[in-house]
Length: 330
Image 1 (cartoon, rainbow, N blue to C red):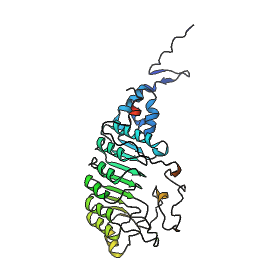
Image 2: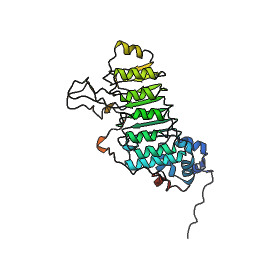
Image 3: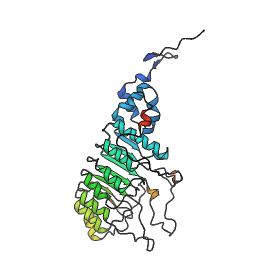
Image 4: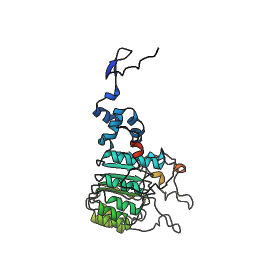
């Protein structure tokens, strides 16, 4: 004797214990969106967003879920190509409403250009350890972010005229972070770095609206900092830790007196979440300049698994993220 299929339970039914049994597919969209908003991008694309048709529909079409996308640790959990495909899907689903994008080593010039074409409303961009992003790629992508207010570039091998390009393209920039490892002149003492005010002058001449500036490990000199202070009159916070070309003489102290939050070259970097990547001048011994990468970290730093490979060039007409959309019948 064949059994007839079990009928689908209504939205509210009686459970075996006598209590109500609810169909989660009928959960109000606002409530479900609030829950989805607490999930990571990968959880939405490969987990909760695949549970049922209703949940897939919401994850794919509720653009508010993709307004702020944090993928700053995804490269530690998956291949770079997969992380980039997820990022492109998130950009597509935001449908022009994305305001914040934070990511790390999987970002390439192609992904930045894809973002700039489809997310012109972006206000916050944070990039860390993005060695596949070039000066030229960054300069071109910045042209698509006229509303950008916060830009964080930490250990991305970007230098020189990049600050000038960023400043010209993003006139509303209020918070700028350009962090790197302090560069030593190996033939001299630990306090003798390579003087270079290129970035400093790019900031001074092109970012007049800055309120917050962080330049950890930069080769800026007193002249460069004075130029910034003279031209960026709205500055309230300046962080020049590990900038060992700076000598805090009386003239510079006077210039810095108006800065409410000032961190100086020899101040502790204990609150900097990428501190394990910084070359320590105090620990300089002539051979091993790196701190212990596994000592009390806030970020994953498994260099053995890091793989920075280029992906395909940017294609304005298509999205690598389609590999995820194909799974959804929406």
